[in-house]
Image 1 (spheres, rainbow, N blue to C red):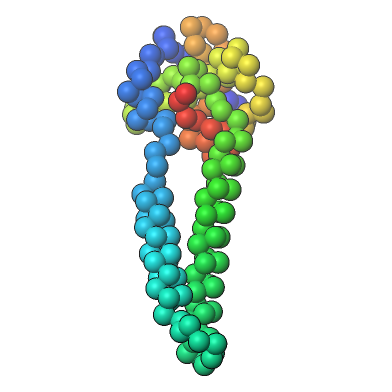
Image 2: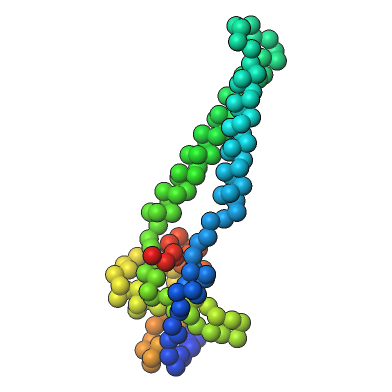
Length: 160
């Protein structure tokens, strides 16, 4: 048995609410990662310059050379990982932001998307059924998908 809600009218979501509720802000982790990469680069440069210019490789010199190689490998891995994340984000299907609606409940407002609106705007991707809620908008049956549900399913929920 499914439950449904009846809405008297749909709510207008202001641009401020869209940007604050839906925008994926740059995480602090990105800034920390940039600082980490800079520190590792500086350490690699210092270590590489500390290796003597002569051809003798003693145990300490070999250790310094290996540390420099490891630092360069870590830096290249971090850069590759960052590019891969950016590429995967751009490939995920973008949900039309003009379909966002805000529905108030006893626990606060929930921003989500109407299936009818998504389909009307050409969104043909398969939507997750596990978190959809049957609702009525202006007397017409529809399904409501919370923004968090769509984001967790891999859809891109950023305003244009």
